[in-house]
Image (cartoon, rainbow, N blue to C red):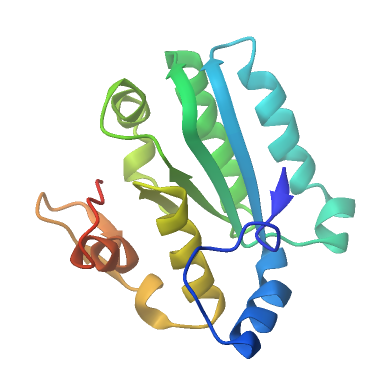
Length: 174
């Protein structure tokens, strides 16, 4: 677990912009998950996320975005997928946006969709980690593009930032 300060996106920026992003990126926490998540392993992830929103941790380091990188995950069972719904509700109480990237469009994505995680507010999905970090940094810089909600082709409400990623040529999925 680390802050966005340690993992900036690969976009090249002027030094003044990089300095500002290093400062505000402390509001982003990143967890790189790996292996297979099931009822036994998801408990550790849930404990870690709960520790971020305890009163003492919140006073010391409030979080605006929690980025979960699924790129190294092999799979997610139903109990783990349901745990992400519980975690999102916990994060929502602190106005933290849950950002999931690297889930692809295969079994992991379908498992998360089957429990309704895709339909919950303050949940964003990105194809790659870099796409997720770039959008969150745009939000931290007060660009309104990520705060706007629009309807996707299938009628679901999604973040405009996802549409921006797709328009840039990447294959964003929701």
